[in-house]
Image 1 (cartoon, one colour):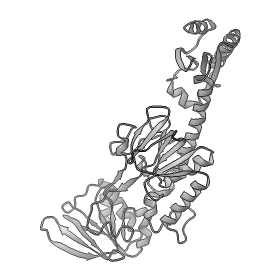
Image 2 (cartoon, rainbow, N blue to C red):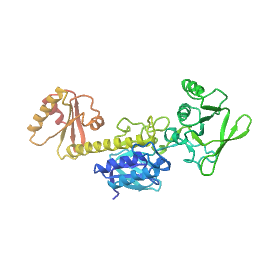
Image 3 (cartoon, rainbow, N blue to C red):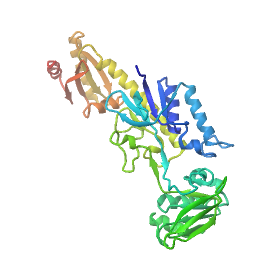
Image 4 (cartoon, helix red, strand yellow):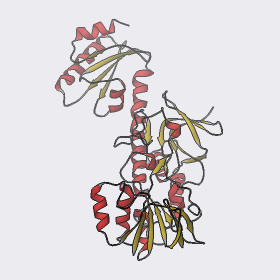
Length: 406
């Protein structure tokens, strides 16, 4: 039989690897499904100086390898494969790979990542990480007192261009529109126009990036005249958006209009037992440090979810006798009294009726699963199936009537 993992992580970037570390360290059977070398985009960043604690001769591949070693040290299995489909409809989640394999788990943490939108300009791929960058926060200080180009004119492009001026000697923005027209908000445009370090090339697009080991120059095309102009530069920053790798999740979980995974602060998606982390998640800052935090949070949330589900299964779903499931809260006095009523009724039945009590604060998932909105609430189960329920206050006679439905 195929293995059923406690946690299956889809994607081995920093978020997925951090989830693996936390999952395995909690003694949960954890696996990471990764198409290639673990580390995601971070593994292709040759210099990484903004991950806390690593600033001396630190490289993305080296740091990501340490992430992977850490996860495997605690027992995380790293599986090879590309996820192309999922089935989250049952208690056991399924992830199907391109090769036709199906991996199963009680919880799935999605970390498929996102990639900078590429314009497929000649030289862009060859010089990526060698002067071609997609992240000013990551790489700006490598271009101190040098000249750089920025491609893009939306909010992110203009804000990042202004950030680059703190380091670079000059920042030249290539804009496809006529002079003075930007796609960013007016406040950012006004600030950028006043910045003496920012230069503008209007009605133009980037045609080619040149260089052997590093970026040396670019070729710019005027879209009105088709004239090509070569200019020396030390770097090219692209800010034309990112693309989350979530196509295989469409219709399976909630995604934003842009295709990012919608989650809450616990990294939970709208499907119980499924979490989203890293660059594919709808979030403010996409960095290694935030991805790692996402993974840690998701794994801890998954651990608590699994503990809650296991306890519920043992006490209620797998019980051989009918069970009264009581939802209560210590701060609601009425629910404390209701527990007394249920205990009295169960005692009279001499073991023929079981009683399980759930604090709604500590068991939020189960409460949400059974749409508990009033405290107290009691639900009667028989062999894992719901017989009936009472929402709100009840008497012993009400409970007897509920049991009579069996």
